[in-house]
Image (tube, rainbow, N blue to C red; front, side, top):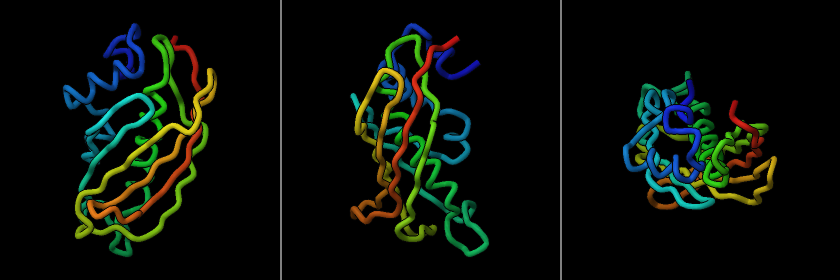
Length: 150
């Protein structure tokens, strides 16, 4: 069973996002990495997380998989805001560009995802990961497939 099934297949993606936001509901990987949805509107979402040493790679920087996950969340959930009831999405492509390293001293990071274009079958989005001073750490583009829930 998916989170979509638990929230209700009769809800639009935006309705699901509002419930997730209001109740601080997170999918399991979001709980594991402590990534929190903090804003959701039509075509735009924001996630926040504060990286720490437990996310380090062997070079003592935050592993790129953490920020790639934040980018996938931002792009995917922005796309989710556009889908009607009875539909779901799956990432087709995620392109991530790393602009500067992240470490435990970076502090709170914000991943903002926005829709570039939204069609009946495919949605395109982009995201940026910044610190509280607006410095860019990671950017991404994504495309997702929209399909019926069965």
